Amino acid sequence: MIFDTLIEVIVRACRLVFHLLTYGLIDFLFEGTGRLIWRAFGRRQIDDFVAIVTGLLFWIAVVALVIACL
Image (cartoon, rainbow, N blue to C red; front, side):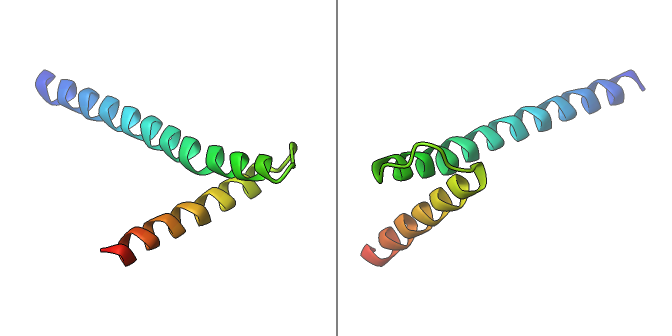
């Protein structure tokens, strides 16, 4: 009984850490890249959604280029 509860707490903690790391990675890769791209074109203030979509499209293009080179 107590071991089941302990295992459940450990599993939930691992899921929480995984979700936080995943969100942080997505935020860093997509939104950060999108903001860098827009700054390169001179735009300082952009919406978060625009930054995420721009970064997502950039990384899709990078993955497609890598697959094409293989």
